[in-house]
Image 1: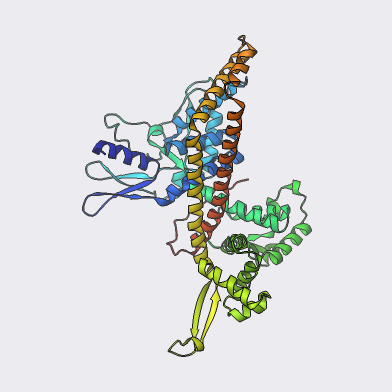
Image 2 (image 1 turned 90 degrees about the vertical axis):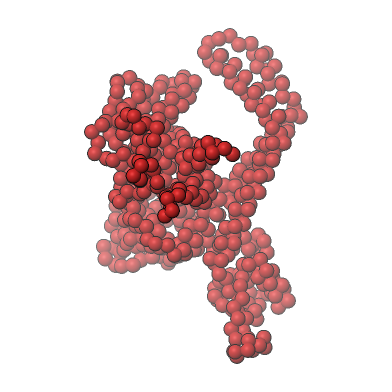
Length: 503
């Protein structure tokens, strides 16, 4: 590669946050790969779907465009999304919308921290960018400058006001001869950590709803929503929430009375104490969500599911006995699991070989003689979670490779179907516009693809859709494992960052 090509490649990677840079002590620029950002590409479809569920089609397209661009300014992405929506509405025969509606969706995503500003550039003496720096006040990342309408027509392009006191968050090297407007200098990106926070909360809510019922899940949602703005994202436990706050935040349509809510909270603290526990009696009772314990319980459930599928139900019984006893000898396992000695030994050592259980030696004498040593079987949840995390990565990689192989093998047929669909769509558009279209022409185009080819296309679409679904399902397991492991790592406490409340 030439030097120019390397520079362009680095620019693209930095634009998407896949590569970080900073000036070293020897005055050289050092570049490093951001592995977490690369792995987040697996969840782009989940980010887009989450935005659609929470805020509608406009937010879906906004997140999609920003993910596609890596980072962009507000005016550009609002215009692109407005044009896309208006094209779709015009095709369907509906009136166009104003860009202000899309801008409101953008503001909602920023207020709830799903979008954030890019970090500020730090310049050296020669006015060159040497690194990107997070502002001291984290709330600056979620500040949107007011915009004023440049005209009264719908879809009119809007301009940013120039009287804002907020500092510019982006330095554009190509505009040295003239001053850039604030709208051109403020760039935005998707806040993946905020989406992960939302996914984690949804996983906890779904788990409680499965264990008890939907109303218990709504109570869990209320506690998480109230404590969201007060709890650090990496805190192992939410801040205490009073009974009165929980009752006041529940929707009236759910039909909760104070007595019914009290019964539900009592059942939740008894049935799922690893999720919700009572920490005080003041204010009608203070309740917390044990985030780390809940994620650990979900992680154990996923591990047990893998053990069941891989080794069978008897191995799962042995695995649960070890989890319950913490450290246990082989003879005790046989008794507690009620499995014959020979079979228990075989199943136990299969799991040991695969890394699901480990052995701890406890010697009576310094010489560690086997006859005077206890061999205790244990389960290291953190180690097993890391092992399954690697297996998840391999499974996702295999699914992606297989899907790409299926597409390449049938590329000619898929391209043919794409051309036929484009011609049919053009004919239908002409028909909607009032032009005369011969029905036989449409049938003739459809007959270009023969019945055997249609069967093959159906098979290809079924296989690729199945592989895509398997990627998403494996990623759900991967997300739970990563969320649990994130709490077990020793890391410095992050700067306090409040998350906006979601209804």
